[in-house]
Image (cartoon, rainbow over all chains, first blue to last red; front, side, top):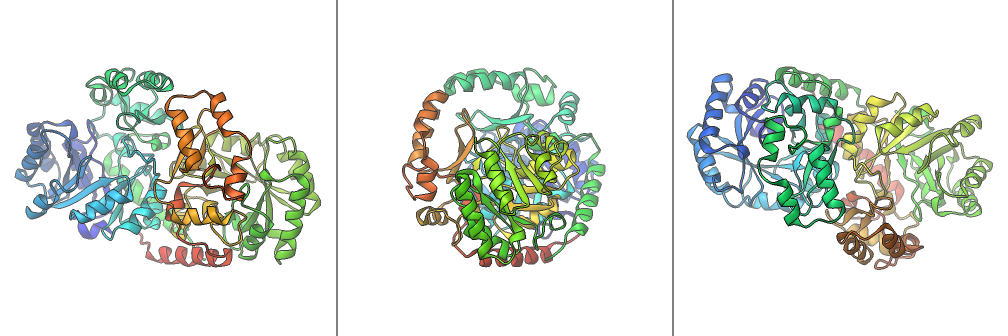
Length: 312
Length: 312
C-alpha cells in the first residue's frame, strides 16, 4: 500500500490538475491525510513557488505536499528546481519519458511516481527507477492514452508487468470505487474529477456547478488526431464533434482549439467557449463539499462497503 | 446478491455469447455453481432446442441453465417459446425494449434480466418489471453502448438509478475483478471473454489460441456509425479502421461487413476475414482451462484478494 511509500494516512492521491490543483487544494488534501498535489502544468515557475509556499502555510503536514510536473514544457527543469528549493520531496511526473528526470530526482532524495496508460509504459517507468506508477484509464478526465484501456482492464495488466506499486486512476469518486480498486490489487488510488468539485479547488464556480449537474453521458473522448482528451459536452465540444464527424485534419482541429481554451473554461468559467476537461464519473457528482468532508465521506463509505463484502 | 434471486452457488453469470455459448459451455457452468447461459442469438429455434436438451443431459443442475435472447430478430418469439417448452425459467434479454416480453415471461413464472449500457435504460428495465439488470461497460466484447461508459463508471450510476440488483459486466476475468465489482456494490458479475477461452466453449480453437496471445491493445471499439462493436485487431479490423479513417459512409461499412463474418471468425476460425468480437480484458488471458478449473480459480483468487483488504 502506498501508505508505506508516502507519509500519508490514507492511500489516496489528490490529482494535480491544471487550473484546478493550486496550493489551497493541495494543503487541504494534505491536512485531510492524503497526498496533496499541486498541478504545475498551468504554472510558470515563480507562480508554482507561490503556490507551494502558500500550501506550506495552510497545512501542518507539508511532508504530504507533492507537485505534478508534465515533462513536455520548456520550463520543466525550472519547475522541478523551484519545487526542490521549496522542499518538495514527492514528484508525480507525466506526459514525457520517465527516463529524463527520474534518476536525477532520486539522487536528490525524492520519490518519483509516473502517470501511465499502458502496461508497457509502466515497465519503462520501473526500468527508469520510478517508485510507483499511476495507471490511468480511458474514463479519466483530461489527456488520455491512445489505446482506450479502461481502469478495470488496465490495473491487472499493469500489475502483471511490474513489481512496483500500482496506483489506480480514472473513474474513482467514491469510497466504494476506492475499495473496488484495492480489491483489484491497486496500492492506492488517485482521484481527480471528484476534487474539482470541492470548495478548495481553483476551478471556477460555474464549472463546479456544471459538474454537479452533469449526467452519465456528459463527456466524451475527443481530439484523437491530436492528443486524446476527455471533454465535457459544451458548445466547444459540439464544434469539435462536428469537425471530427467530417474527418477534419489535425491542422483544422489545432486551429479550432487555439490557445487558452482550458484556462477560459476551467479557471475563468466560460462554459461555452472554454475547453472543459473532466472525467466520465462527473455524472455521479452532486455536491461541492470541503476536502475534509469529502475525505471523511470516502473513508466512511469505504468502510461501509468493506463490511458488506463476504468471502465464498 | 444474485445468489438470492437465482439458484446458483456463486454470484457469477457465464455470458450467453453468439457462436460461443452452446449447451456444453452452459452445462459446465451450471455444474460449477454459476449461471450457465446459452446464447440464442446465433441459433435457429430448433438448434436452440437441441442445445438446451444437450445441456440438460450434461448437468445435474438444470435449474441453473438460462438462455440469452437478443430481442431484435424475427425469431425471438419462437426462441422464447422453445426455451419455455424445454423448461428454461431464467432469461437474459438484450438489444431491444425490455417492455416487449418481460411481463409475458414473468406471467410464465420466469426470471428476467436485461442487459443495459446506461442508467436510463436500467430504469426502463425496472419499470418494465425486470428482476435485475446486467450493466455492461465500454470494455466489453461484442456490441456495445454508444455512450462509451466504462464498467467502473456505469455501475455506481446505475445503482443510483434503480433498486433492483445490478450485475456488473465488461472487463471482468479474474477473482480480483469479481471482488472489485462486489466492492463497488454490484450484486454479482457476468463474465464473457474469459469463458470464450475455456475448453467447453464453442469458439474455434484458432480463436481461443489467439485470445491467449493477445495483449493490452489487441481490441478497439469500431463501427460506431452502425452498432458499436469491440473487435480484435485482425485483417478484417484493419480494413474497417481504414474505412473509418476516411469517414466512410454507413452503407460502405455495412457492405464491407457483409454476412457471416462473426460465424467465420469465431466458430470457423478464419482469423483474417472473420469478425472477432472479444473484450478488452483478453490481454490478460493466457490459458484455456476447463470451466470447473476456471470457476475454482475465480473463487480462490476472490478469497485471497478479500483477505488482503483492510479497513481504515
